Image (cartoon, rainbow, N blue to C red; front, side, top):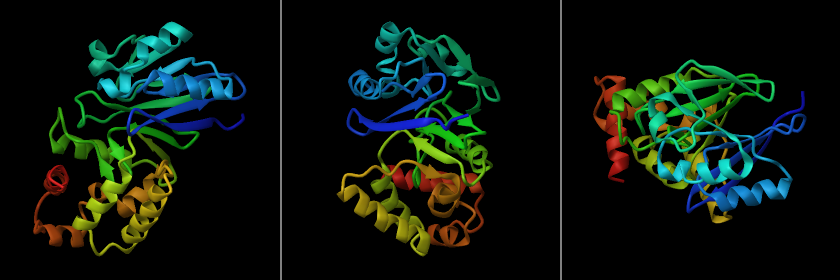
Amino acid sequence: MKPLEIDVFLCRSDNFGVLLHDPESGATAAIDAPEEGPILRALDGHGWKLTHIFTTHHHQDHVEANLALKDKFRCEVYGPYDEAIAIPGLDRSQADGDEFEFAGRRVQVIATPGHTAGHICYYLPDDGLLFAADTLFAMGCGRLFERPAADMWHSFQKLMALPDETRVYFGHEYTLSNARFALTVDPDNAVLSERAARVETARKANEFTIPTTIGLEKQTNPYMRVADAGIRRHLGLEGATDADVFAEIRTRKDNF
């Protein structure tokens, strides 16, 4: 079986468009549909035909092009069961623990409420790929709109249990801001400092910072490092629960 081909490109102002293509069957999935034009240009550039849209959550900047793309390609739209009513063109709803097949590959659904109540991630275990949208960013996490921090912390624990080598594709190019903030709560982390410097250089060159890996996030993402003694000491939360430390970091990011 040939490896999947992945194309990443910018949509809107800072959304990532992601296409997942199987060269043997021709099956092509869009991870969310932020904007029709860039997706069509990417498809045309490769000569691919869209067969699936894997929707992660209901926010407009992730579903805007669902109906236009479905009308053009007759593609099948998957999306979260808990947000089914809000996903345009939905054909198949997916809940936590569900599994389906894409181009002969297993796709597992992981419910990650926090950013929205029904947000899901798509995990391809045999390919080592996670499409995390607005749950997990490089050195960050999604803003908590519909669920409390404790729920997002539980979602993060699910993702932290995945293999370290898992490649993570996220929904927005927020990495530079996330790196700068992470240094304010984890200032003694040498790996983080080195990564932040690389990100500064990459963004000055207008290079993307996607993908990341679960292992790298465990080393540099403060939301995954809530048990770290240095972070807790810096925040004055030595005796707090992991969920409370997570909440404090998220609150500080909201005001950063």
